[in-house]
Length: 314
Image 1 (cartoon, rainbow, N blue to C red):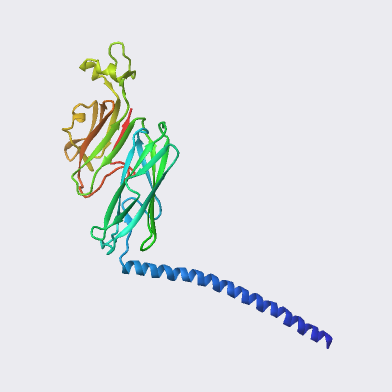
Image 2 (cartoon, rainbow, N blue to C red; image 1 turned 45 degrees about the vertical axis):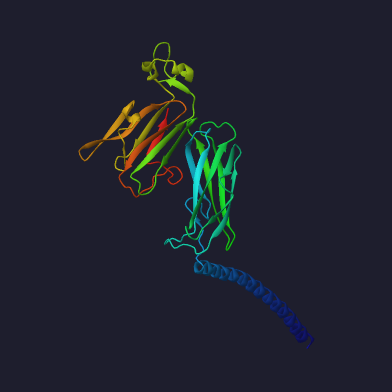
């Protein structure tokens, strides 16, 4: 009889613990479910409200997932300006019905500084767009192949919170030389722009006592005869491209005074697909190319990660 009473007591005691453990376990799972479900419901409600009130905050370069851009062929000495547009448009071009205020910040790696054209802005409900610019400036000397980055963040808190950002990494190409392509969709041509901040020349064809690749100061170069100047260049540039995408404006000065070229036959006609030319010290060069598909935007490096017109220097 005592044994039966003992077993009965132990059964009640054991199952009491099991019941307590079960209650605790169920409570934990219930709490976990409620927290996650409340977040889910909150997100649904916020999405519904933002769609109902038509709240949108987007950008041509900044994204919610912190988009990464690489700016190649940076001179390492010149400031670089990035123009950024923000808008309050939906994908189907519906616009917000309210003004949207936003703030902007930027931070730079060591060796760079960044400045903003404005620290805040307002996207008007009448235009649904606004813009600002960021300038990255070197604060030390960079060598070929070195890189540094800036991060730009745009944030809105009223009526809802949303943050857009991007990282722009500047990679030094040939020191003193920078390259970019400026273009717009529905524009018939693009411009390849080369900037050279180097203040000296090199001999590309030996003459007199000067040897190949010898460095010549700008004042010495300026005193040379025209025939000898033609044998020098501050930098030698090669541009290569696909004539099925873009075609060179062959009236430009640099093609007319080229050092060499390559030709590609297409449909019974010969088209230039590469040419090499020299440029002067401390100068900027604009070369026009006509687009076969005018709806495309070939802007480089911010819009496109690879240029439709390839650049190299020596």
